[in-house]
Image (cartoon, one colour):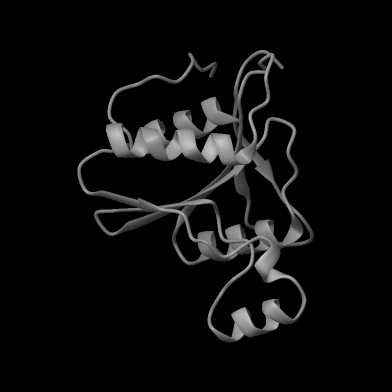
Length: 151
């Protein structure tokens, strides 16, 4: 794909809620999710719109396996929470970051749907350009550095 795809819905099962997916144009390199996340937070630190409070909830990974998962669940840890949570003027945004060819886990999809049902704006961004575009489109970043979009 040479152009970014916007507004493509992803549904699983019989649930009526859709989670927006945004795909970046293909590049020669495919940065890791950690590299994408670092870049996204660099943009939020330097270009964040007024009133933006953004963070990464550290509740996934190795410490969520086996016995630790049960312990953490009892403490309120929820699996599948998006990589980027943004609050602005009473609105909540959740953005899951994936590599260009990454795959969304079922529990991530379920959590995004639950957040959307609770009133949050959520999406999955496949690649850095898609993440930056989504944040700009929702007024969470000042200015525009994302590639030209097709309609």
